[in-house]
Image 1 (spheres, one colour):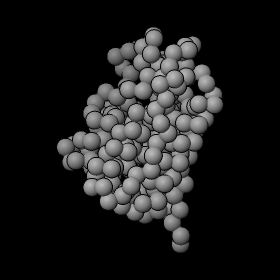
Image 2 (cartoon, helix red, strand yellow):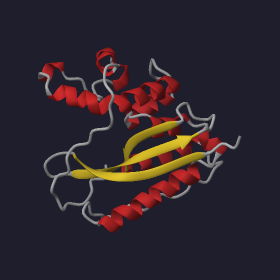
Image 3 (tube, helix red, strand yellow):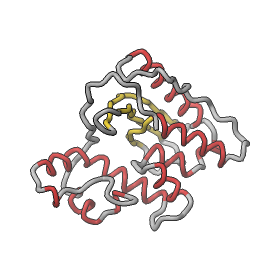
Length: 207
């Protein structure tokens, strides 16, 4: 059977750093029957700066044996309210992933799998990929997938709970391994929840 990897970059959403600064992140949807992937269907959200990290990491790890595709260039005049710029960037990010996933060498890189199929931060991905955590890449992908599917309903539950009883997907170096979060999450079907968009004309914070 032919192995197929389909990836989409879609659904740009504005997130707030603080009152004055915001950034966009994008949903990355992946469907595959490839044996290279632990999960065959996944959905995560990533921002532009994380794509930049991924490209730099893959290039370094491949020891220059593979020429990485280019990312859409960083635009100093990028506006969160410019639909054309956002659409062009999304298309460029999707094209980057499509070309990257055609390389068998890059498909063996743990950082690529953590980027596509976990909600870990850059520091957490680097630690996990280099064996500096008590959990493996496969465990992270499986657990993060379970948590992401249940996240939305869990958030709804938490709205009615006192602050000290709420769980968070960023409370430890690998959020999905928090035992308390796992126990609560087992009872809920969820999806990704995103902060409301601030009304701002400021340029994107690409940190």
